[in-house]
Picture 1 (cartoon, rainbow, N blue to C red):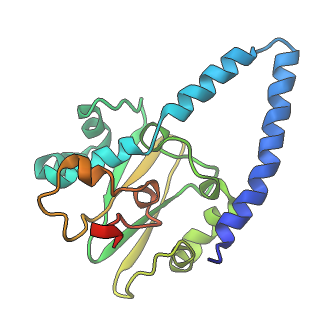
Picture 2 (cartoon, rainbow, N blue to C red; picture 1 turned 90 degrees about the vertical axis):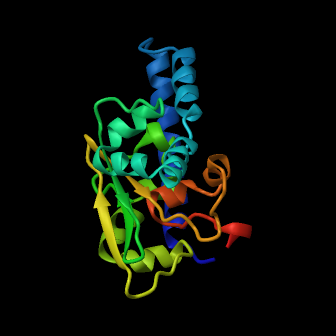
Length: 203
């Protein structure tokens, strides 16, 4: 599939990985930080997974009262599930039959890492950050998501102290599913808004 955003991200990512490695080596050589400290921090970041965010969504799908609290105060609601996000202001935006939400950070790559783990390369790439605000439908099509014309696409721009999370619509055919089953159909991309949760049998 033609995917200009992902292709551009892969090229840019190679440059920044080399730059990161060079900075790490310089800091170690100067005795500012040790390799073990870097490894511990990297391991801690990699332990974070989008499945935390998926668990939040699954719980909101089965508990209407929790869903209302999540939409009213995202940070407080995720703490109910034992997820700590610090002082960040978390705004949860809900997809509906009339509205589809997409998340971006146009200035850098602000991302709800406590809920979603490390951001994908394409999210940090200038191609995505600049184009999704100008032509969101075109960018979504490149991710394989074509929305009906009546659906309004809203793009939300994250900031240094504010993060967004998409609450996708629960797929039809999942009535009676357990929370664990629902968690498994929510992808990272659905939580950013460039995909939809998988319905029964991957539909």
